[in-house]
Length: 483
Image (cartoon, rainbow, N blue to C red; front, side, top):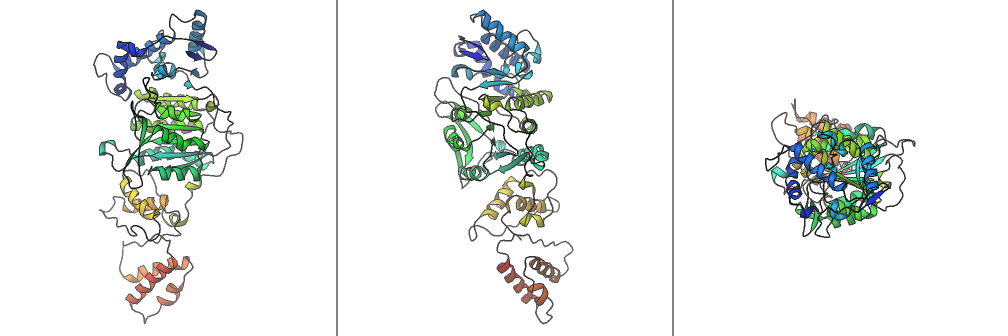
């Protein structure tokens, strides 16, 4: 049974028995990510057009009731509102985002390029727009065990979202929490403390007919975990989320021949109002473009259907073939605008404020990329309980490679529980007296003036004695200071 608006009628389309259609679908994934038709028979756009027109013909089959069929044709060709389609599971596995009008040529025929297209889910509770800020939990998963070729460029993905949301965070419209060590324990803590409205996942996913969908996470020791779709759904179900965004390959996949629904299907079944997932993987460039446009649309008081449409438009304008990759499943209330901009904005995102140890360091500038492994190591040290794990990190390398920037980024992101930072610069070093003077001034700012006022001016004390006194005072006064 097909349902669209007030039109509903049965369609007898069995793609598993259509050998030609099955062959086209097998050739589709590489084309969606910018490759060529593996068979070499069609140009990429022609392959998309061929699949899309066949879906159009299946949707508007000659066996459909004539009046209902004409009404649906009129709605699809002339309507301006989002296209809301409801399919049985056996047909929902098809790439309906490629639905293409047979009477229009080229890209103009693709319906999802002309207006929002949504896979409508029945049911769901009534939802009201949220007062700002919109809280977004961004999970970027790139476990250390991944092969070099499969690692996610964590810093680039992070920068894309941070840059896209910066103005909205400053205006109090959106708050962002980034988790880049994605373990069940850390994610549960983030959900409890941050209480997000949206969870966005960037990383690898998959689907197997014998187990369903899964996401590639890690445990607390950095070992691989394949988190099953049902476990992810159970983790998110009681959190009152408005939407989940899945930038992970095959997260929209499911199979007609099994009861497994895949990651997106499991989330929808658990009651999440809206899930944006992927039929195949985004390219890095498209993932970053999608994040930028999506949050721009949401913070402009658009709904998820319109935001997804803007993502498609942005990708299509950039001539990215993966404009058809995203699939949006949602209940009717899940499509309403998330933010009520008639209410006053909230406070600016506190994560933008520099406090504690970070306030003593120069603010990092520009986009910081390529140091994820080093940042993970420094984060583990900074977040470890006292007496556990390493207490000293030695960062070496030629001048200008970013050692100071790496330290500043690590303390700014992960040193929030520390009181202050002591920075001793070796450039222009001439004698230990200068270092001791700087340590004395630092301790005085922390409320311990003894070294500066009494010990350093005492000419009778040796340099070694003064060094010992400085170390003792640092240990006593600043047990929680990053140096």
